[in-house]
Length: 311
Length: 311
View (cartoon, each protein chain N blue to C red):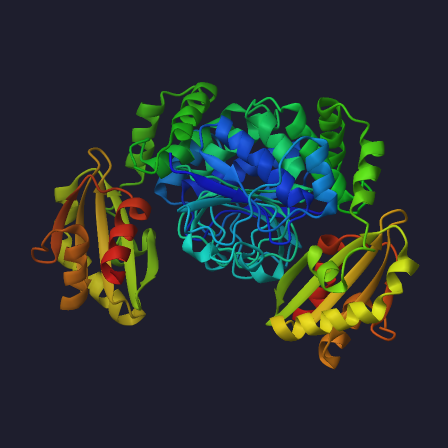
């Protein structure tokens, strides 16, 4: 069988990398010939999880068509979040927990999406449905993905299925998931030794909203005031990134993982900023606004922005 | 829980109607509040299957947003094949076996697609995965859907999963699937009391191939020579339909479901007819050509036509 690559989205997080590793293991057990790769280096949190469970970081690819004819996607489907030459390969499988947007195929395919907190929660079901035993290290990396995406089951995206998956995977991985989870999340909050340019690109996604190229980045911290001391430098980096990449709006969500509160910084035209204010029903003050309780880009940021831009 | 409607595509076939009935039963067992409806009256074959297993034809709807806020789709995803006001309702679930095209959502959803012969084959898996027992009549209508889509497991779209589902469902439905399936397929082949205008529109799809508007219709029969006695009237109807709808080529595939052979009738310009001949490597004789073994529009007609028009 021809080899296929499996990967998550650009600027990979623990779900994108961890679930790709798990899916490749499962698919190879089921007779496919796959390799888990990544569209970028692991962030600090993901690196912590990979090390904890004994994995090397997946090989980073720039393009896919030079290696394979077909690929499998996890944790994304929108072409602009995928490999740069996604239009030159056939997508045979998708496992995802996001909305579907601009994803078109020429042929029927496997597509498995559920509105749960993390792709690894669906992956856990796929192992069970296919009767494939989950090895300890695979359970550990899937557990890490769910803890990451749900902020230790506290994000509003969290479902009963995520709770069940975490309980089951923690048992197989043989870890105290609360203790391990907090340590892993904290490993991803060290922003002191990173530049603003790097921080606004670590966990960032682009969305096409009614013709506007909207960038939404997120940083997890344990000390919001400390992060906000770098506000001017963040705004400058966001402005420069918008100019070079053609973003019509750039929003940076800085989330305190300990109390689930966020501050947002926004760069854009007067028009897109007004649309942002309409989306959240709040006024920006000096490009800044408090968004208490907002921790999920997918559930609490993209839907109101979509409504405001397209409404 | 707010009520949701479940339906298949326009011009519904046995998969569109049968799988909607089965999915509504399953979802209601799982705690949803759903009703299976249809975007048109059942055809003769579907009516036969519904009667056999004691179902009324689902209520036909023209629009959805006047009744519900949310819907679930089976056997399709492309908006132009769906209810007319699909853009005014939220799609929460899709179960399908087609390519994904122009299907966009604002929020994450349940999406389950597999490249198998029939949506009811996936539905059979969903019952099993959720541990919901399949009642005899639901098994019967799902069995009917798979027999219909796969022409009794003989179409090249048929997979191992379709075979397994048919075996399991026939047992629950307590029917000899070969005997019943042939009777059901034959019920859909009564062309005697239908006009040529109706017959060329019963199961017809349009494709845009390199700027050409290509129409491909299919009729199932048990007596090819009898159908071909109406050849001149078919060609006249195809010619008139092409003129009023702007088709550059109109192909009618008349398939003998007993021996899986087909005759094709083709109307178009000299140029599009030459492209047709290139596609199948055969010469048209008086607008007609034999295509032995060709039964699947999706797998055996559209791909060679696409290659010939775009190559």
